[in-house]
Image (tube, rainbow, N blue to C red; front, side):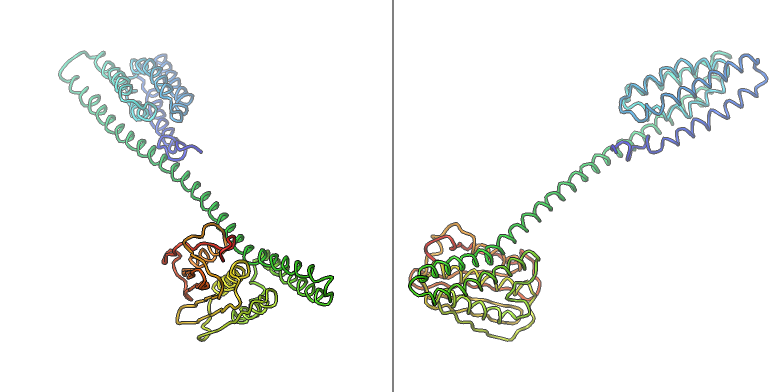
Length: 415
């Protein structure tokens, strides 16, 4: 639907114009037919002319009102300028028809330089019809002033008002169209942002779960291959661990697809999940991992537990790939309104300012800020590394806290 058909005054209230022309033409036709002072033949001619005018209105006026091309309106009034004086010559009372024709002019013709000449022609014809039978005199001039000039002035004022309404409606229609386009653009942008955010979330989840699990499986397979011929019993034990790790990874994949709580958190607390994670990492890599819990559990949201568990998983994955550490300490603190997780290793450390690229720690930082928290990395060559994440227990504005960009070390040889 176009803007014109939605809000344009002339279109929406087109029925009103039909009613107006009928309200003027029908009583006028009755008056002409009842005027016994006029010969029957002249009355019939006048009624025929009136019928032609009404028929011309029915044929052309709707198109002139709906079409933005004012040539329709100019053509409509050009024919009226010929038929109207003929009707006036027979029945001067037909000047009442201008009550309907005048306002129509301002709906069908847009430019004032076209409107004014047409309006002057119509009212000049009315003045001529009044002067022709009686001649020029003070009385007739006074009557012309009352019956021609005053109505013409009122018609111009009404026309200016209608023009203002049409212009206002045109601007409103343009604004509505612009708002509609803007809303559609915002909906598309919101959809794209949602898709992007969901892709980022899935990428982080896959990186912290499936990718790390496949890395463990690969390491266990390599160890089993090297010991298969030398010590079959040890290789068989390694294969059992590999199978168990594969099953755990499969369970994580199913949980991720179903958007459920991570397997380690299913029916368990975060502390229990961290203990299982530590034991599994010690079993798979030989690096001793200890878990310490401080403070009382105060009912954190599930999203907070998931974020902290993923942080521990990613930190341990970086330790196994880069740190060459012998021990790792996981510390979970429950403070008032705050949960903090710190993963500290005694590995070779690195300089955070020199590290670029990767995804792991950047994903940790993004997840933390998404929950209104912070992430910090403290490390130096030869002094180990600490990754610390703090998350509020109460909902917070996502933009309330800022996070200094944290380099990811999952693809670097330093950590």
